[in-house]
Image 1 (cartoon, rainbow, N blue to C red):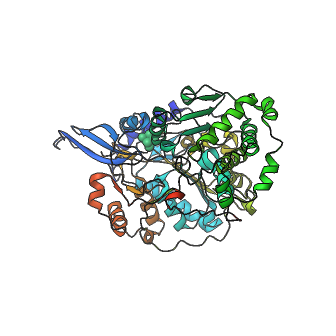
Image 2: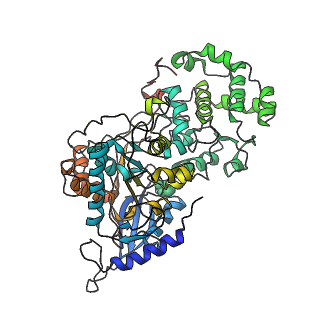
Image 3: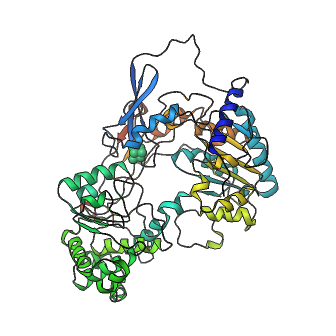
Length: 574
Ligand code: SF4
């Protein structure tokens, strides 16, 4: 039972802010009455941070106030249009509930009593505790839960400090099971953003994927386009979803029985020899065993399991085969449901392979990426102990860190004690199962720091709360995400942070300097870092600042166009 009160936290935050205005030594952004107020409009290209998709946008400031953000037409992700959440992102700047100044706890953990402190005091406190943890327990005893691009500089500081215990709850909560299913099949995961060629698909199969509700901009735009040109849509969902309303075939399946349907679909495709024989001969491994495995799973067997009539299972299997290879079995994303999720994703991956759609136009493209050299820094120290989240490779198939494993180690002290937590941009009260276990783990810590933009429930338990500026007020590292078109995008400040919030890069760099790790930050400020990287890639930083996005030379993303067919599996085949 969480006893936190967000309202109470906010009240404290507001009160400490009032106190914060009185002290000296902080670095607050203050608008002096004598300064001439900004008038007119100006635009600043940047990219969105409301979700991980990282659509590029152009923000407009009117008379000195952040007014709006729209899509950047140069951006291959947004095509000049943001989703409704991205458009609403400007509200974060004036949000009255924001964290405003560093807060240091003054009572028991969870009692939500803090005092406002300067950044100097805050980061000295953190660095002193981290030094003590390293001296008494080794640097690996400092753990971190970090989510998103904004965490990259914190990861850098923590690796320089010597810990390998950096995890992301988003893996187990979201993509982890899916990426395991695809990786054991193809030797590569489903990518992020997903490698789904919706725009070129003639048949789109959504099983556990709610386009229109899990609003990922490019996918929604491409789905609308595909529906508009008459693509056949098959939706499997217990609920009549938005996507289901556009479907040619809607299959209201019993919850938790997707694998039965997937097995029956594969049974029909094999039995009726509707699969892509040439593709399987070329890229497949173990097809005979696979045929034997799916033989018992007839549509009649699947009917009582799934509630989907055998005739409908056969009709939809034939529909998928009719359009192959331009049949997209959407990989889904938020894939942690029932505990059999890696196998469900594996079945989806195998169905795509039967139809010959991995690496094919209208199916699942091969991602490309713009290569941007890193800023040189000294090598990280080699941790002396293996990461505590997955001791002895207890979860051998996971492709990511195990966030509950780090929490377990913090509770049990095994394989070794974890004495510090740094939490960035993830509310562990919701991103880890069991509040009670999270609170038990927190009580074992010598240091607990949360960095966020708003007073999340997990911040209520922290010893130290660090207020970050929102994405419209800061630079971040470059975005060079996997996509069909290689590109680089720049995030840059549109307006100043209203109070004593700081960008993540500044916090991470200042902390590193206080820890004696300044050599890992040889640059003076973030623009020096960004400009170095962009120039090292042979690009113009001035152009990137002006346009927000620079596209790279196109690379093939389909096997038929020359994309490499590489399967990093033991057999080197699917
Ligand atoms: S999908 Fe929407 S919220 Fe996510 S980055 Fe794009 S515009 Fe922002």
